[in-house]
Image (cartoon, rainbow, N blue to C red; front, side, top):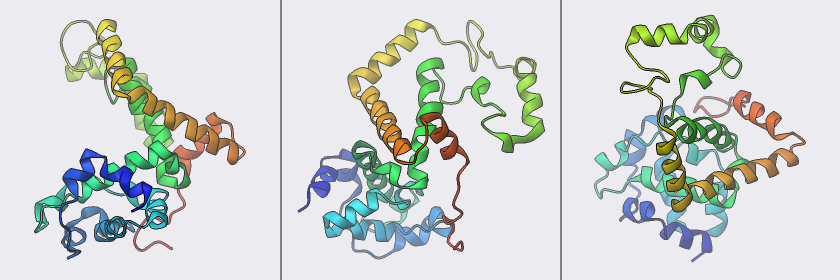
Length: 233
C-alpha cells in the first residue's frame, strides 16, 4: 500500500465516501460534470482502488479532481452509497497539502479562490463581497457591471441590503471582534496554515514559470487551454 493511499485513508471524508465500490458506473451515468467535462467518477474511484502510488500521484496532479461540482448526485444513485464527491474532496485536500495542485490549470485556480473568497471571509465576513468584484479582474462582466460598481451603494439601498452598514441586514458590516474570532478559528483549526501552503506552492510555481506572483495570479485568472470539455481537442 502506497503512502498516498495511506494519507487518503486518514481523511474522514474518504472514510465516509469510499465504502464498497463495484465499478458499476452509475455515478458516471448520473454525474452532471461528466456530461460536459473530461471527467469519469467511476474511473477516479477505480484509480484510487488500485492503491497504485504513481497512478494516485498523477490523479492528484490532474485536472480531473477539479471538475466535480460536489452536487452529490453520485451518492443518491450508488447502489452501495459510495460518495465520489467526498473522495474528490479528500483528493483535492491532499493535492493542496502536497502542492500538486499547481500542476494543473484548474488546480492553479486555487490561489485565485484563496485570494478572493478565502480572503473576503476573513476580511469582511462574507465569501462574496461586492466591492471587491471589480471590472478590472472580471472584464467579461462588461459595461453593465461597471455601471453597477459605480452605483453600488444606490443599488443595494434599493434592494434593501445593508452593505457595510451598522446594525442588521444582508451584507452589514461585521464587527472587528467577530472577524478577529474568525481569524482565531482559522489559526487553531489549521485553516491559516492551509492558506499559507497554497500561497507557498503557488509562489514556487510562479518562479518556475518565470512570473511574479502578481503576474501568476493574473495568468490564473485569464488562462484557459480550451481542453476541458468532452468534445474539445
